[in-house]
Length: 637
Image 1: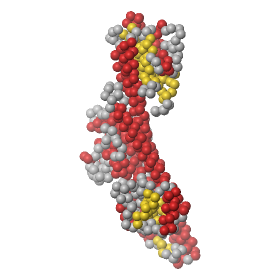
Image 2 (image 1 turned 90 degrees about the horizontal axis):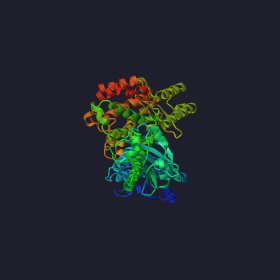
Image 3 (image 1 turned 180 degrees about the horizontal axis):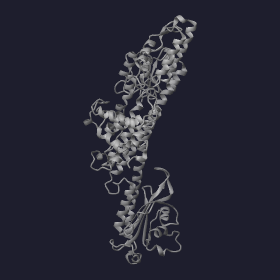
Image 4 (image 1 turned 135 degrees about the vertical axis):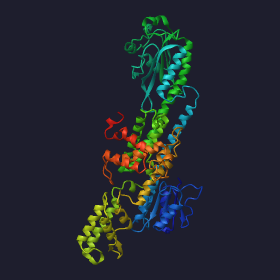
């Protein structure tokens, strides 16, 4: 984003001087493009921080400007438009950041620049967050390139088992365990405690063990090694010298009935020489095939770990420590990335209060669908759960399918009635003004009586609410649109603007055709936004799956009119879930909450119309997935 403010059209020298003076105070330079558009952002040049249009505020002029300005004007680049007295209704359909009148005052100019700075701060924050996610993912990918068995494993628990298995087999240890040092939050500073993570034993079953904490202190063997950073190689823990501060932990021995004799305990240090964990190997055997379940044989079969064993384990420990931190980093990156995605969805909920929580519930239905499919290995839908990557891909696509709504004007997203609150209040205010004019100058209005005016007021209030209106209401609205009044300047003004008439005449929902087009544009915007994320292998199709959730199998959907053969399976499922969730969700301004049974009938009707995939709808119903947020105890029984 540049530090240049571009002025479109002609303005007075006084206004230009005021703008330029305040721009300098805020660190911006001002460029006047004039009527020909020069300096408005030529190809290859840095994009400006904002546009201030002094051109006439007419539909043709404003739309022409948006058609010629660089991509981002009005969305990521604020666009301010000069008006005269009132804001024309058509501008509500355009991404205009604000309006101003001339001559400009210092207060108005400062307000404009503060708005520009807030926009730049928000965009900078978004870019920095995206860069952090990309940088973290890139760092993780570089770590994964290490070509060893340890560094190829990113699951921490599997990694710990792998470390333990490698070391036990190498030094003939009958048993062993791994402790991981705890942190204060993901990636935070280390704490003075160890978490017992995994255990292995050739002679007894340790599956009934559980995770537990161990303080880092010199009283226990693992705690001593973590505290000092030095290994301990003990020939026989029952013969410890009186002067040593540590003593064996007998809880494990008592719990499992297994006696430990020789023990090799080493610290796992990262490249900063910080202890990130402790590896403990128990009971070195001269013959790896021997079992020690009979305690009487332990003294006969168990021997001390030698210096070669200790040297080998210490050499593995260095790589193991780095691998553990890498695995933890991978978990942190995953949490960070998913947190970023959650934040993106939350930002939509903040803007679109009407459908808040919709994306989260759609994701819930999608994952319940995959869980149900897992029970049927031979079902065609089972491909959804063949790999963890495909499941995650579906999860992200479901979670982010409506992210394109972030580019839809907020007044459209939050429109609760056929007219926005401001527009409705202005209309009622005009009626109040007309009521006063009827008393002072009855010849200046089209109404014959106050009763007639009140009937029209009641008509507007009634039809403005959601619900169907009949042909007689539409006829009355058209009659009303022909009625006028004379304002204080002697001009004859219709009570209803063209937009007012169109909006109040809506027979279904609460959006005009232009507003509906703006809403529908979110599908293509979702694809454009999600395509900017560097998805890893296995997640490549998230943008396409998300963008197709409004397609229909007969090709009558949007944004691309795809047929069922061209759609992803995940998109067909999302199409069903998206409709169902919208129907049974909480009351919305344009419709009441619907019973699940009624919503399912609508899904069946959509199948009959060849809009939704029959097999998807049948599976959704037969498996009871539709009950997820209604009667969750019935799902996946």
